[in-house]
Image (spheres, rainbow, N blue to C red):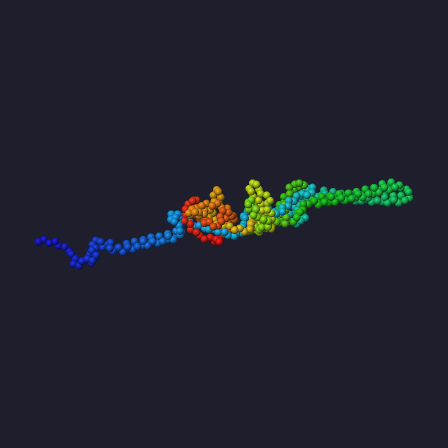
Length: 397
């Protein structure tokens, strides 16, 4: 008989007997727990992502495909109104000083620009050698006239004594009296001419008409000057300065004389306190601006002709305040995006005011109750649907 022979295990493998798993499937069975753990982890991650996404979606919005955009309701805030205006510094009361008399050759200039001068102080001395001789001649003429007057008086006195004796007629006495009076008049004329020369000579020297800061010196020794020539000196009376701040037509209407201002010259961060002392009564038809003149005390940093910027207090205003990120601008002006009906983006034109530490003051265009797009305005289009996420503003009331 033919028998097939082979090696057969006497003890069957437990997996083969108990679970019916073939020997060739043993590697898969060893890794099934590892694969099951990976699948469970993926399921947990998917559930967590779904929960987080559900928390970020604003409550009550059905626009699942619309972008979520942060909006702000600014409300209204009471702030100190301020107007920022550029301008040019100049002397508040500038005094040009020129030749008062007939002029002549300048022989001395004892002052220089930047010096403080007092009223009546000599700024320039003009040669007066000829005028001095003229004054001496006039003084001598006075003495001659006095001598003639005395002689005329003596002749009259003698004639009066002879009249009583009948040696001189009444007509002769009248003639001698007239001669005496004419001699006295010539004395007065000579004295007046002398005083005139003295006054002319006094005006040769150029003096300061008032105390103040000498801004310009336009004359040197040896120069010949005459009446009608350009001013030789310029003085800031009392050293007082001012800023000619240029403000718009609508801004100047909100200002009044006496309001305070802070002036910062170009090239420095130091601020100087001043006060509006005059408002321009006219508006420049070219640029539609007026001038607010801000009085300033003397300071070395305030130089006439320099550029400065003024921040003028214009009273308190109640208006919305927005962060700069919420305000956009184009050729039509400044605007913001607000949330309209059905959460659609609506463009709203606004007029901005000054910039404070809290943000930009919106003078018109908003009431403060609108929902304004905070940051993403540059990526939105008017009419686009969004999911607004409200961020509470510090200025809410």
